[in-house]
Image (spheres, rainbow, N blue to C red):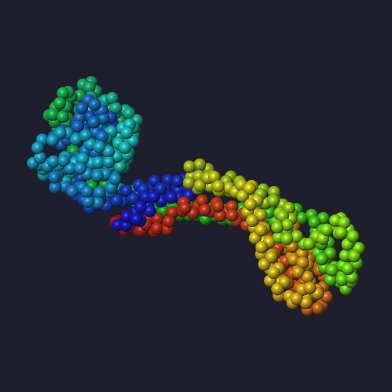
Length: 568
């Protein structure tokens, strides 16, 4: 047998719910665990279980007490009298070891030498056992249960759970209840499962015929031939009166034949074989459901990636389309202006310019304009980003996932997970992410600029390429990348730099470095720009991960399937 932890994994498994089979899988796995434990218990113990079941007020506890021969289960005019399971077992019987339903406890009452006891009423969650010393019933468990149509949910759950132990069901109905819907459907379930059943119609009038009752019962399910008995209404002391009736004695003989007849062992073997076959079929269906859910989860991830790639393409196309010819001309002019300082007359022109403009600066009509610092650059970059296009692409991506990839049923766990607040990015979150990425890009650019300026000798730095011009070229490269991406950036920089670069080693070094950094910059910018789509995709995938069945579920089911195929 598997460990308690592995069994717990099977009973508490979660699934995404992409398929109808997947939606039913958690319930099916819990049922499989219980059925497997139940059949193992039945094989390991010699007990033959007889359950007395029926609708409210049909008198099943009366029939139960008559079979037991003593007032074990309380009867009376107040209904319902049975609030839990009440059993009649031999005092040496041990039912607890390996009992497949651990949520129930056992309470034993008396024994063969105990004084006279009062009838038991029972209670939820507890199986009360009346102990006896009848050797003929040493390996028989007679069990009275609450009503199958009880208004108490705990009673209905108890009946639905425990009756699966039954080798024989005594189903008690009455003249006013035999056509009721809930008891009739429960009787049909018992017959369809292949469990032996004896049907008692209690409290019938003298004019009632067996044919009339059988006709009505057979509308829902066909009662096996020779399995229907009619008991009249008896009052007072119905238990003692019932034990003397010929109809009851005939029923009692039929029940004894079911319990200890010559074909009991064979019928029990057929019953076990049917249940094992049904269990194997259930395991097979569960395995198919797990595989289908895994396949659909893989397909869903692929759809997320495909739609994300399309959203990225939309962002890139939108940003390049937003880069106008006027912006391209502006950037070319800016780069040419920077590098024109390095022609042979650059020094005299700067001196003349300073002399001419000195009076204007003195009067405050003209101010020196050093190249902007990082904060100003960041603000300028923000203004050049077409944020609306990015927001539209990400939100379009989210809508496609919601509308085109999720299951139709809103009860699906993956549907509910994706629809939770905080999964879809808001416009504000998208903007915050984009600006944060650009801030990090500026920091990277500063670091690269510092390293480049440090690697160029001081004489070269001030004599040919000043630090301010290096910084200016890199910032303009960023603005080009913001506007149009790698291809546009290379064309603009090459067109601007080529006329001013000589064949000297220093100039070629600086030119090559600027080109390399600009390419890195463009790629980093593109990555940072579209990373917001990746954030949204990861949010979607994070909804899926907790819902995937752990590998041990498939491992355990496969082991069960092998055991079933080998007849174990």
